[in-house]
Length: 185
Image 1 (tube, rainbow, N blue to C red):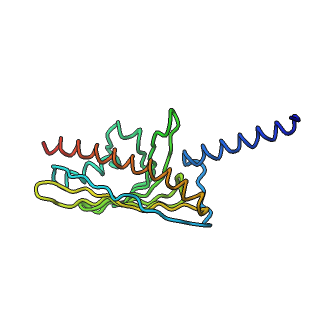
Image 2 (tube, rainbow, N blue to C red; image 1 turned 90 degrees about the vertical axis):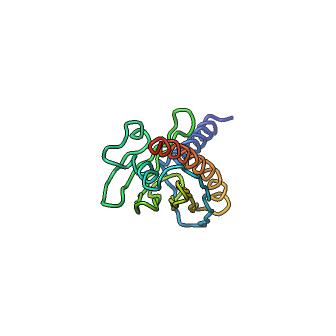
Image 3 (cartoon, one colour; image 1 turned 45 degrees about the vertical axis):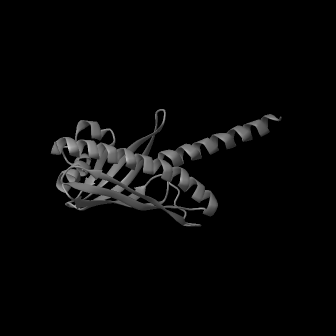
């Protein structure tokens, strides 16, 4: 193989790895608006043995001015309004690799929290947490929509991202349940 061919192959391989890492981490968001397809996120739900207000407070805690120290490694509020924040969310991907998404988070106390993606590994995500009073507890539900560009290739990428996204939401639900039930204890 000629040195120029080897160099071109190495450059193409490096570029491919760079694009992949940029997509995974959200550092290189691709929003072409061409071949956009959407898929649902969720629905997911969990019963929490705590009042709806307590569950809402646990969900809102990472976005508070006095956010717990442990949450600051996962969420950074970039801008704050009366009922909405712009926040960066940090999610471990693999090893030391971390995805960063930037989302608006709108609070409708005590029944709803809505998220809209501003920057991330896909061009479009909208999602909602709904809190429904249920007896002595709360039914916490989640649903949303994830959109990708580039037709079939984008759909396959969306399936990869959606699986991780929903796993993160499930882990968040488990943490919210544990903390809300501890507070209501």
